[in-house]
Length: 344
Image (cartoon, one colour):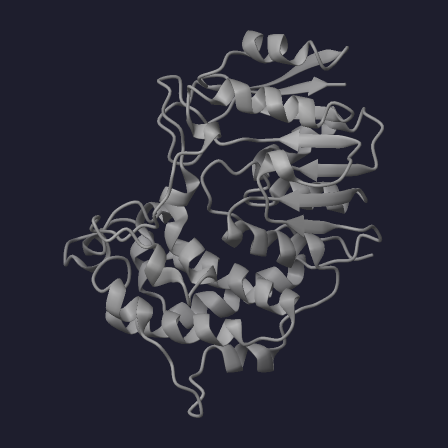
């Protein structure tokens, strides 16, 4: 079997660089099936798939679900050159909507780029194969992120790209490269990442508390809740990518009271300091029969002692593995330590 090549990632909170360490700790457990309950970038799921595990990737955000479908649930389907050519060109027989060009003018991308996005997004919808659609979305998401300052959609700041000022950093060249160039490059990256592990792997788009099935191991990397009680709302950061997946209904979900046109959203219990404890207790009870591996950041709102106290009614053995200091992209805190709580 050709050694799989894990795709790069630009998402906040990615565990890509920690996968080998996480595996070194959980490989001591006996497990065949594993649920990645908050799948995010899919880095951990992908690593576990490469180890021959029956992986179920889950994330409640649809754009992440498509990444899981493309890279975890997909074992053989790739995008051909003809597929890509059709995706990046307007079909003269079809009528195209201009939702992005008319709604997001001057917010994230240039006018011509918005028109290109309208075209490709609608072409992806017409692909008959779900794994090809997922791979195309993966390439589109990565292309959008790499052309954004800070790789985020948290504010209206196209001016950072277009301002005529002297620049000393490489990002300007990446920002100015055509969407089509990035898209084709990420299609190749996605294609390289597709492999057959010989095991059954799936992707789900569900609330972590409601994922069906039984699993030997459940890996938990919930949204980061800062020490001050403020949570990281990934939908707020990546709402534009979520919108790409619901193009026909996107306009109805936009919060037009804000300049950067985010999606309407509510605070999840994982980002609410008043509800996060009960959410974890419910999760531990739901997966009482599974071993648990919980990624924990040392400067978070909940302490290690609190986690241990919450786990004791459900698990006999609790072990804390320490990675040490680890700095996430865009994080201002380089002193935070990364831990893995393993309970069985």
